[in-house]
View 1 (cartoon, rainbow, N blue to C red):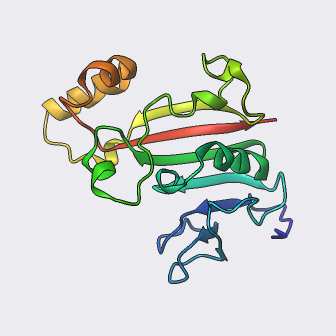
View 2: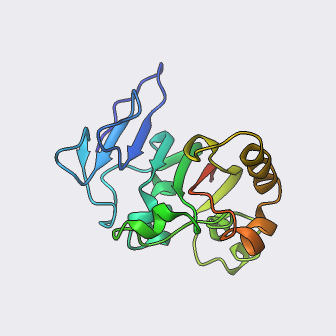
Length: 186
């Protein structure tokens, strides 16, 4: 898809937009009843965009549905400009939302993108040319029904000590969503 050049507005592409598309975004969805501008299955490669066109890519609750995670991330990297921000929200491994939807293929942890992040243990294997920078990862407090006091305190600890939480306590105190802010590195 040819995206018109605009000096005034960054190009935002939202995959899996459904009917709640980000304002100003080019929406992409497989569902013809969605608010999508482009109907496309994320499991079909390549995506219908030229390389290096997006300033921001939004993937809220969609990457858990793709069949082939690595080629999907490589396509997002391809269409993103250098410095493109990629926002991802996905179900966390211990959340009931992951296990209750039969269309989910994977759950996420704070290390789900390490394969693409320079300096991580698994990135050194170089199975992908796509490189991302992890700017922020957190268990999304907006999607967790917080009670007073204890939940706020526990969520603060969980976000501060993610690895310990994931290895030891994720199924004792489950959270449902995880949020990533990534940047395309080219």
